[in-house]
Image 1 (cartoon, rainbow, N blue to C red):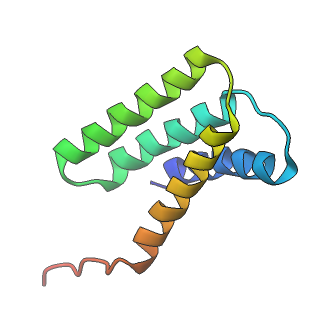
Image 2 (image 1 turned 60 degrees about the vertical axis):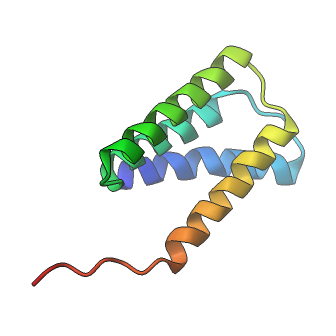
Length: 100
């Protein structure tokens, strides 16, 4: 879980800095980000259907960016705001209590 979170953070940081700084990035930060999403989903999501759906989606999106070769401004915006929504969801979600 920590490895996936770290990869997502490293990729997100590059996307965030390119949005705020106004410079272009290539597909490598998004490959790191979506690779982190796949690793994180494998460690965190318990339902196998959702786990493998998220993993396959992240891998396909990452390979799509690799094949396309460039990252447009709206791509960065989608990644930014979807990450914000994901973090907000887990920030306000009640953790499950272990059975005693």
